[in-house]
Picture 1: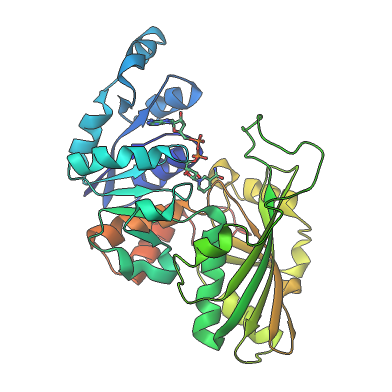
Picture 2: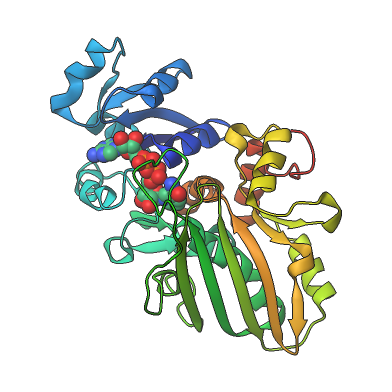
Length: 343
Ligand code: NAD
């Protein structure tokens, strides 16, 4: 069994902990938190050992009646690998601790690419991270774009990608973020950071990205144009994408008109936390004009990186090849059950 520690038990960390626990070849050593709150309580309820991330705050856990298993350093030492799901920037600060205990670690997309040895997307560059001590699982948006680029590049070749990312203002719990009643070009100038981020996975890809932020919390929406090196029909592209893992091509008859309906579908399907691990592409939107492909895809920011973290664990440790890992991850999480079916 691969012994996995989770440092940072928030939006991403708690989902990764559940996904790791579901794997047949992994166990969760424990999770680290900075302070007692409802998420710390739920970790205890789920039977995860809880470690204190900040020495000074340890008494707060006792006062809340929450038992600690130890300090984060002990968690790191006892783990074969750590998934760091701390807020942006803290993962980079933690890197020294991981090095000190000689424990490989996965950082998340909020960290700069230059603090890690490699960036990761399971579909795109699984083999590139074996033996790398510090690896970054790219952000939700970059994951969504990379998953789409991989099959298109392999099947048709890509001249250029142009993507406009309509981004949710914050996650449902982030009441301090916005905008509340506005539409913000973010950033106003080109490119948004997403294009250069995709280049950490595809260094030679010609890609321009624009970003906006809107008053929504459910999902991101991408308007994508890919100039291909050949001219397949829209039907061919659709069939290609329908055959991809971690991609849900939304059939017209479902009547899914936006991210609200996708979330509802995930709730009806009994997905945990109504998570949508797949890229959701409107089948009807897949269009070809000459060699230009157009489509809309929705990305669930809180969960699409979760299976990627699980695969990155095996990829870094050299425990399975790409196909074996992705298949195992998807089966264990229930990702192989289409969104249109109950789990
Ligand atoms: P979050 O704020 O929901 O969770 C972070 C958790 O880490 C919180 O529980 C916080 O208390 C804890 N924490 C803070 N300092 C810590 C420390 N020193 N040691 C241990 N724990 C500490 O954040 P999140 O949304 O889960 O984001 C985590 C990372 O994942 C970031 O890099 C972010 O950019 C990336 N990411 C987030 C999303 C998203 O939409 N939420 C999507 C993809 C990637």
